[in-house]
Length: 536
Image (cartoon, rainbow, N blue to C red):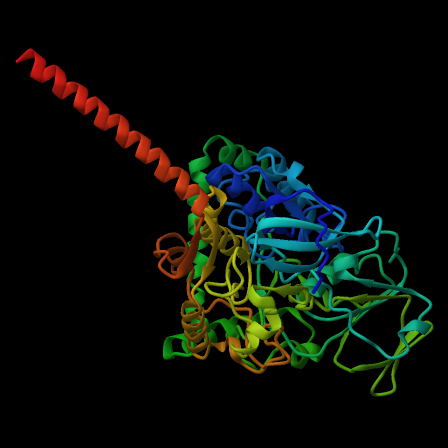
């Protein structure tokens, strides 16, 4: 815990960490709902956009229809495809930030290092580092919001003798545009969504593409339909049609939710979806790869891969190879596998996903309680309705523990939780309260409900999913209920679970104001009575 009393930067009422869609939504609603201009959004990347700035690998795109992978208050009729690529999503992000005047509140290339609750002032003292200069500084804020998503810290897998490699090493989330893949022997490690988008995009240029995988995925057929100029104009001038399409997509995606429940109906739906995946693979992939492409675990245990980039058919190419032979060592111009085979390599691409390091930042609440010690009580990462922890006043998550969606839009979830946070902090922002926090009993009750609900789903299965915390063996990522429940619990549910420390100064002033109003009314009543008595 840092103890310096000096604050290097001026006090700010609200500090948001993370300038992705969650941070953007928070900034927009601070302005829109609370008329709050005193806030900053910090991000460690050189530019805003979150995962859509970081992930610039060839083929990167969204796997949820963009009409629903967008902010509800900022519909976009200009997407060129149902599943647009990274550049269109990032362009949309920047347009929304500019249109809602949030851009000027964003400070990039700044990393959050630590935060400590100061009881005497009911503020957070936050330690940050300017990554362009290396200088650390402190800044106090009234409300601290972590909008750091789960797709922010690349999983840099360790491979023996990697330092002897003479070619280029690159992670999909830290793409180096100076790396040329034309006529190169490219090794891709990983077989999730990033790899399935990357490989079809580089296969034409690369001499060879060798993909190393471990666990099979459920690949679902998907078509990336082009949205013509005429239809885009229709959406632009008749926005109600875009809203109808958004609602239809929401409803359609929600119909897939029940298949992840461990019920007779869920099993039937899963079997049908699994059969669709199996038939798609067998109809479009070389037979020699079927065993590597068709999983034995329940559909939904890992996130499905929607193959709108045609990765599965791409495996027919003579220069594309797929293997589950584990890499045991890196050599100067090749990789060596467990079976003793040597594969040529000019470039190694890590398509290995992300770590959960967004929770590694040191955070201290009341009486110096650390976040790690708080979670020990629960046996896993947890937060009330995914946004708040007891004994951490004025601190909130957007897309915190158990906020993940296995079948629908993450942006819908982010907006829902932003709305709940806005409701919770309203009285603090307007000065009526010094702090707000969740009741310990409410947090524990929610945690127990989540655990029971998850036990009735496929999300806790043993399939090597990143949903599972490797230390505790528990799923800390997935929100186990449907989107209607999420919306209701964040928009309609009462606020009885929250504890507010009222601002005595504010209420004292209010009491004085009402006392003066009372005296004036009394005086007017006396004068009116005197006049009445005089007249009669």
